[in-house]
Image (cartoon, rainbow, N blue to C red; front, side):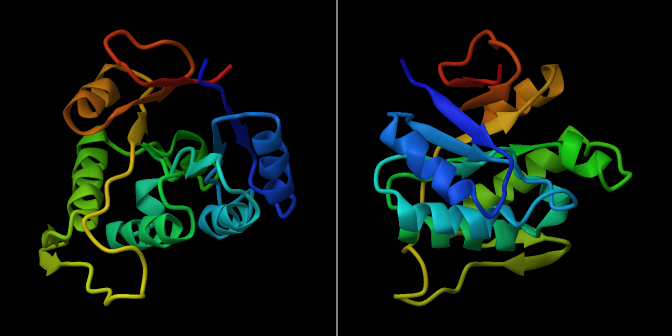
Length: 187
């Protein structure tokens, strides 16, 4: 069985993830709620340094908090630190945005964001906010493009599931979702 764990991001989370690895967990997801916890990508980098086999990823990243270039650069950095162990979960920001007094994002925006991150990691030029953007990292400044990591979407309903079917490898949900080969279920 493929068992993952999830942690509220804290300064002790790298120790918890190392313990989870020792216990045989396949993957560790870290919460992305900056109003409540330290920066998820910095803590994931520390987790990468302290582990060697457990897969790592934010669960779930909130598109409105980071430009797609910032997320793509964070993924590339983590891939360099933990090759073959990076996963990316992206959602509409239900919890993370509520802590900031905002509603979850529309799935049309999430779709554009996920598509942009995928294309940036592939080494493509993307139009964002009416301007072309591209990752320009030279050799030695992060993992080489193209980068392909498993992507799951925190869906919560049919609109999110439609985007996941189009762009993602699976879903991050509170219960099983029909038709998805990969489903990280939160219990």
